[in-house]
Image (cartoon, rainbow, N blue to C red):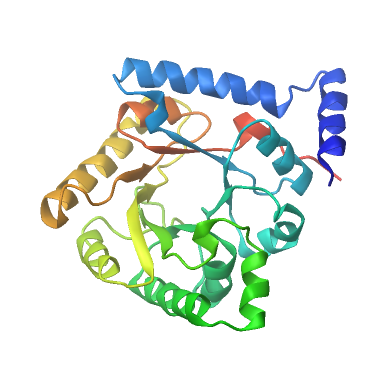
Length: 270
């Protein structure tokens, strides 16, 4: 969708009393600034990943126009329906949802970062897929690269990944167990075409954000313990915190927060 159409839709929403993405973003950035200040951290240390799952391409384009550059999608199939119309944007595309092994090859082609690696088998699938993707010089490979964007990450660099740690004991949640994380970190650090940047965690949803603090603290402490084993410079990224609790996550050391509802609002119908 042309940039002008995206701006027109934003104006129409504003006329109807619905806050624009730019207005929502300004409020979110104010929250980030306050939380970072309270924690004695520069706000520039925190990357805002706009979780654009279920939202159409024109809303992502509007968010990009407002200044956002990192976007998170939950499903490979959904992103496939959007990526072609957004390939002109200078942005980093994250897969933040659970990735099934049989989708690993396509994910390695479509995303700059896989933020939910939780098994050795998945990491090895991504390694093999990225190796093929970055070493084949075929016309088909070039077409696949073009479907992501023109950024360096999509054109031959190692695939950025985060390891998802299971913070919520609920049976339906994904993630590697805290006791198994050291082994997975050690293995992923050895891969040639995948680059491990840090940890991601999704705590249980609790209305009182302060009650989520122990989960964020556990993830930070796990990261710190892993650093004593693998080096102080490893795992610089801590991805934790969403729309209602990211201030607490920032206080506990988050370097990336994933925000959807507070930015885009509820899913548009129709």
